[in-house]
Image (cartoon, rainbow, N blue to C red):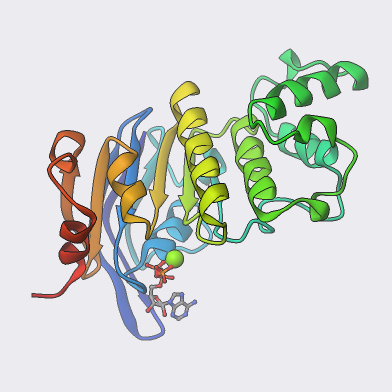
Amino acid sequence: MLSLKNIGIVLGGQRVLNGLNLEVQEGEFVVIIGANGTGKSTLFNIISGAIAPTCGKITVGGVANNFCQVARVFQDPRMGTVGNFTISENMALALRRHKRRSLIPFETRKRREFFREYLSILGMDLENRLDDPASTLSGGQRQALSLTMSIIGDYSVLLLDEITAALDPKSSEKVMALANKIVSAEGKTCLMATHNMHHALTFGEKLLVLRNGKIDKLFMKAEKRNLSPADLIETFICH
Ligand SMILES: Nc1ncnc2c1ncn2[C@@H]1O[C@H](COP(=O)(O)OP(=O)(O)OP(=O)(O)O)[C@@H](O)[C@H]1O
Ligand SMILES: [Mg+2]
């Protein structure tokens, strides 16, 4: 689904990514960890087409530079939603790019039912707040709305960049469980960057460690079972 070949980029005179290769299969959930400044967000910027690499090739679903198939949820819950728009208006925005739009009811009342149904999965009572502006939601609620919007937008690849970093421990666990649920239920191809070692060990089929501009280590699900958070932190440290 996603293929990166020999990606390199120089930013501010520094070689951030250097010969990075990565293949992600359809429906795979891949977690990326790495120290601050190793290039995780830069990698996501490149995959989403926000910046162009100095060298290398990217294909999404077999098509070169197919960035319109890539959705991104950011660390800051305010980034994925429009604060002045209501929940319903935000959902309608996300729907505008749904591949099978014609299957979604056009009539307002039925469309609101459709939104309610999706939002009720979150268990945050947002289905009863369709006319509230997104700016009135808490960080966790707003992040959950961003996630839902990225799912109904029907993208092929989902990039989650430290989506729980700004949330309290309870909301963080809730949003992460939710992300995992929708990613697996919808069979989404997903890449997630995190500094939460517990999440890194719990979620995803593969765990990658980014270091020195490339994927330095890869752990499969079975291998993760034998690792502790302390073991993972050790993988960041330069030897
Ligand atoms: N626009 C830019 N101009 C100059 N340098 C940049 C730019 N964007 C990123 N960098 C540099 O690239 C490096 C990688 O940054 P990036 O944000 O990708 O790291 P990260 O792994 O996401 O870190 P964190 O875990 O702190 O989010 C850093 O040294 C950063 O200063
Ligand atoms: Mg980052």
